[in-house]
Amino acid sequence: MEGQRWLPLEANPEVTNQFLKQLGLHPNWQFVDVYGMDPELLSMVPRPVCAVLLLFPITEKYEVFRTEEEEKIKSQGQAVTSSVYFMKQTISNACGTIGLIHAIANNKDKMHFESGSTLKKFLEESVSMSPEERARYLENYDAIRVTHETSAHEGQTESSSPSSSQPHSSHCRTKASSLCHHASLPWVKRYHVGPAKATSPSLRLRRWRPFLRLPSLGLHSVAPNIDEKVDLHFIALVHVDGHLYELDGRKPFPINHGETSDETLLEDAIEVCKKFMERDPEELRFNAIALSAA
Image (tube, rainbow, N blue to C red; front, side, top):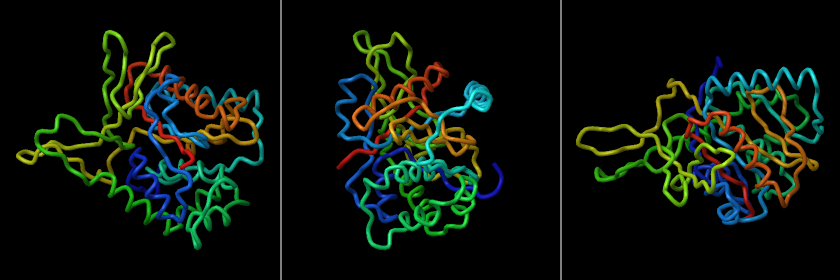
């Protein structure tokens, strides 16, 4: 993707919530970690949920699937309500911000905005635009760009002590956790989704922070070089007019994943997340956060 490049955002509720607060969103809805995919762990997520963000690796297998999916939909068609707010991505590494915009824009009636909110202004001014026009509008929307850059730096400039054995958070550019199997319960330590298989029992999630090993300084997480290649990507899963939509600015249109409701959105979205993981069973770099009522 040519043109502008932004620093990637971290898949971290603290970062995303602070980002949205700086854009003028009242915290009556907050992003929270999704700890796992089984009913017990999903029950830990506050309800209702109005959106889920999935962070996943862009692999060769995924790109083959994406091409086949696009060709199939263009051939067979799909129903997409005009109520869906969708925008393309033309800025490298802006997928986190675009995922947040998709999540908020498609739940705008539920949100409370502060006076003079930058995000509210952007949504109101872009509501009648095409997905491509919204992308170009974001390219020149300095208030959102500056806030994105601030949040990207804030999420990545913490360090841990030399005795720390592992980084503890995830970022949309770097290595992620490994799947740990215990005799009684396969699990992934807190915050990062591991590969799902049809026969696998409970899975827990883990989030890792990108890091560099610095001699004598221990384990540090640092803001990435803006020119580094990013192979992780954010998408949003939202409920609009009774259907679950996958919103990905790299795709030409929203993807309709079937019926859903406010009550079942989280479970239905997690089923979509499982399909992403099943397509890349050797990959471990998955992470999910949910936008929940505070």
